[in-house]
Length: 159
Image (tube, rainbow, N blue to C red; front, side, top):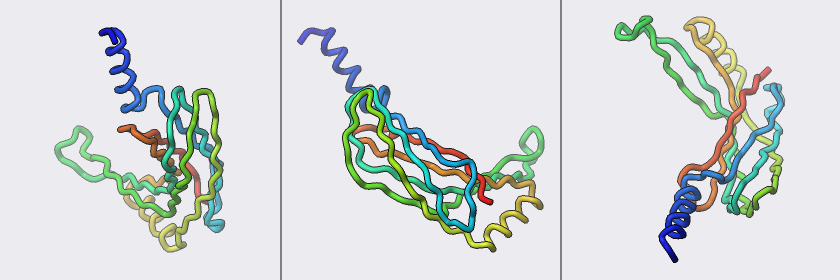
């Protein structure tokens, strides 16, 4: 093996570990969901440019509250703080292989539970404290032998 081949091999190993040209995850969900249904249905599209092995897929519904706090040191006198809450999560544990050019669609149903008190309380909090409350569906894909796993998130409106 000459030096050029060793360099190419090393670069390929580093790219595989970092996830460059690895698995790409794209989440496909509706723009809104009804709170009373307690369920969000969607798909995860997976593609890759090299042979990869998927260990599991983690999907969750996350609420993020972004609110402003007075801060004398900042330029405009306030700073943003974020709190996150998880209302539902699933882990799809089936392992599989994905090849270059292959598109794999994984269907999922994400159950969640937000009681009406939480919804009312955080809605009032948002109106009184300059708080933005947003909900996101987040997908994280665990790929074998990579340091940085692919993920995606989409905002969803709960009605």
